[in-house]
Image (cartoon, rainbow, N blue to C red):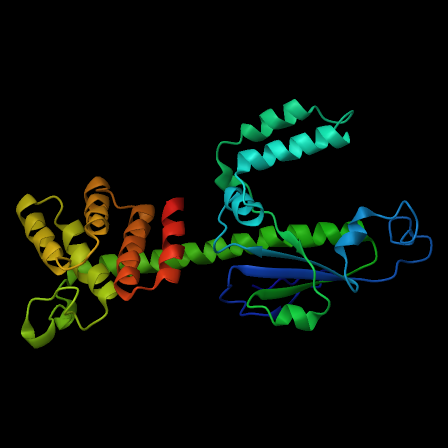
Length: 309
């Protein structure tokens, strides 16, 4: 991701611009304001010093965001505060009432009603949170994409910059995810024309393959061989029954029958098989693979992704 425009100085200090991680640190450097700059920070020692100063450490104002596990504002409230979106909104309202922060400017009840009217939280960009780093080296040690957004003398301008950039970054990361998913779907559907699997469907010693004796890539075999056969043959009851029987035989010694049934139900209940349905199937297969390998860390991530679908 590259941004080039006159007067805009954004540099990617860590990461691959062509493949975003989905985890971001964005920061600016705060410089001494010009003489007489009332919007700057000459009030550092006074009672009227900007509350934004508390977000600056060693001249660095930074934010970080995780768009991999947090896909909407509900995730953000849950992960960062351990509460639901509705509870978080209520706490903000209650605190504002206690402090008088909204009094005279906004009606707390009106704010509450407006926020609760936002039924689709997926459309609300995930906020980035302020992060404290003592140096650029400390930021570069994180497994995240790191962007330097420039130098500012006016703190309010710096704050606007670090809060705006994560929205742009998120848009490009979501587009990257979408394109990758389209490629995976195209690869999955292309195998319908050649469902033989080029011999991958053989287990040890020439036996009919099962999950236990299969020696190839389990996930690839299911996505390129078994599941496309089932999808392709849905309109033909006899052919579908045969494909279903092959799938059940392969999964026969799998110790989680409900996960097997989830895959079958997903195939049979969504005959159109749009991008979202196919993505769900891919995740269900990945879940089977994680269970088979007893990879519980990956399994938990897959379960979270399935919740969002």
